[in-house]
Image (tube, rainbow, N blue to C red):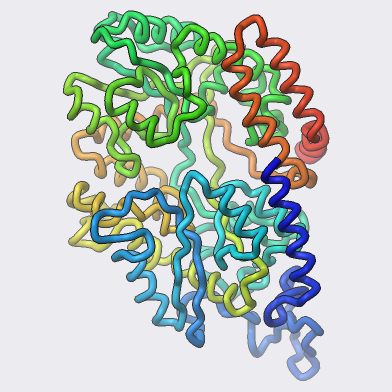
Length: 551
């Protein structure tokens, strides 16, 4: 309920803020799209909120990088902090934050970065917005929160800064209409800039291949086969270990193996990407949690999986205690996540962890892969930012979408970090890049999740070269993550979602653990209690709204 309290505090703060008046003339103007430019500049008159534009002046705001020289404007920008800065650098003072300011100072903008712990970003973001201390560019992966803040009058409508023909040209060219429109509501207000994903691949199932081979087992293809494999890996471990477990860190592809609506576009969109809504709407989720409960009570699932931090989880992996996991795509060899397999093999040379294809669905025998939508995180501007600062923020994001911006922040410099193979940047020294730039590149580059690339093929070709000796793993990981029917995340947010999302999340957080860890004889009663609690906090209203929209 803590999130609910924060949301209430936020609403109160914004009412007070609106009564006091917003900086500049940004209060009412930001919620009203600018009228079309007048064809008669002699009779064109500015409206009361000064949102009128003319044929002579073009768009009111200049947000294409280089089109305007600002008068020493300083903007604050949220930056995810993974506590991984190399020696001699900090998350806010390093080669790449300095590069940002070298480029932005050319147009009169200074960027101050506000570090936020990556895995506490939602709670921190809510606290900052409620306390009106949020950065001028604030980030979240949960669009419903951003839309909720907009509906409460707390963040800017960015359409006036983006939609003009001469505005934000780099943003439009790189992000594209499909992804940009994810941040719009039904009234065409643009409440945030959504990052474009280089690939929609989302999740992998990983298994200790050396233990499979030692036990004479085949790669599992169904949930039943997986249970048999894990039972032997854990209880008949070839290395005689008694500290081996399965850890389901992500909960995406394994859920698809039990879903009763997998592959149905309309039904999947009705079910939403929110797991609480999926649990209520998709009857197959009962079977998924029953399976997880079976794993837990058999001693296969880590006994304290629900309290593990990601660092704890990674530590278990690199010391050989993880026999199976669902984790982010390419996580076994991903440089950003610490080249986990490489470290494991330094500790245990014979160890091998490979991704496998998604398991066959228990209902129809088909394979389904969960995948991201075309958009990643969303960046929005709280009303505490002045009109001029928002204009500067959009100029900053526009620069991010250019070759001198996002491309350099992600790939570095030709000759030092990469060489071109045709149009594809191929890393020169992955170890050097990891220390110099890779630790920050995905977090400082805000307009493109997983990198600055023209196509998915370019992404796969480039990414495989970032893990020398493990190129084959990278290719197989991204291929396995999109096998079978691909179910992309829904990006639609129903009107009442913002009212109920905090309570739904609170119920989900409590019961996702309870239904998995309860004794088998208590499962049905716990599940019914979970469904009743979701019903009490408005899940059915959201589902009815989603049905109406997608039908």
